[in-house]
Length: 149
Image (cartoon, rainbow, N blue to C red; front, side):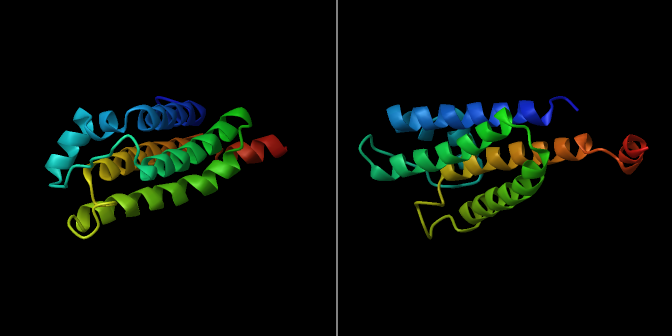
């Protein structure tokens, strides 16, 4: 285990807050980032283009901020049961969004673009890493049996 689940939550919280800040200050910097560009080209997805006054950018930023705040609650009050329930759901949701963005490239430009795919891809990686770390940190039956005696 390289990082603990708490450290991965801190990494996820920091990543989401950085994306929210960049979306609110300069959305073109996020959609034109090298990682987003290369991943979008590799998957043959159209580029996302946002203007400074686009109301959709504010909505995306607020939604990402809500997810980040739920991670902050996990960081402050370590509750592994919450993470054990939330992480598989988040992983499934991120995988579904990235799959939809990849499999329907021309049908809906609001979802099938390079930025949505890149953000959901990073989300899949982080949530899967967190899921595996939580499984490693879970006490085994032998450990719990020793605590009861």
